[in-house]
Amino acid sequence: MTERNFTKELLYSYYADMEGGDDVESIDYRSLIYIITELHNRIEKLERKLEKQEEYAAEQDERYG
Image (cartoon, helix red, strand yellow):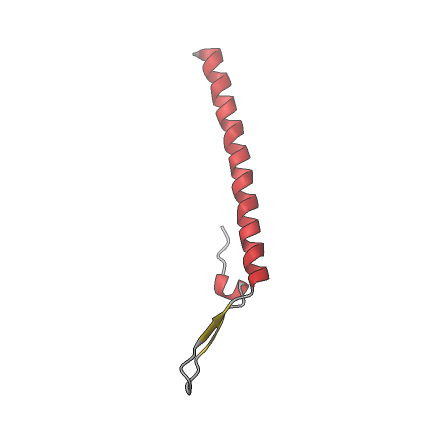
């Protein structure tokens, strides 16, 4: 598995306002949506794989009891 730097991928930035104390944190929401979409696609792929394995196991159960 590849190690990912989500802080970098999300273009996270932090600004500390020394005068007013209004610190600001931000991320790029397009990057967040991309990461969530990628995760969702991976989950769907794993669910399909699991379904196939369960179907195969059920077939083997029927054949060999």
